[in-house]
Image 1: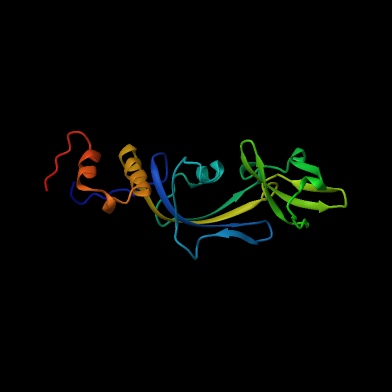
Image 2: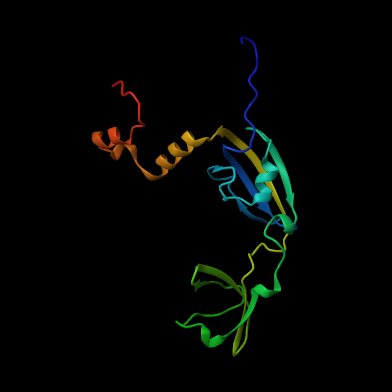
Length: 186
């Protein structure tokens, strides 16, 4: 159709989004931002951002700017008192200089768990295992750079871009990586 306008793609399922963002606390202190760096790129639903944040992005398009307020329940949750533990000081080996505000990584059977040292006493140490932003009201500033379709074919291409340098492939490897039925016109 000549003369008809095509609507810009909006953020939704199966979209790849590039954006600038900043995160500020209640007092306005910015705790994270990429406005002075490259935009962040993610696929909706890939788990890179909070579900509440992704939900707030739905329907936006390239060029849109928004301020998104998130209470603790939609962000990193409330502070859970059960995640604050008192550990014997002799639990810490290796000459760690324990001080309040120190972030320590603890090895668990399921991976690493960061903990923030809250109090240090002669015989014990209080460690907070809540997310550092738990219980905090957050305000995100976002600027959408691009919104692209990201169906199965685009996901395969994206994964390929991330894991394989195509210039390093040999000619035979390129042939074996071709999709069935693909015609090479070279």
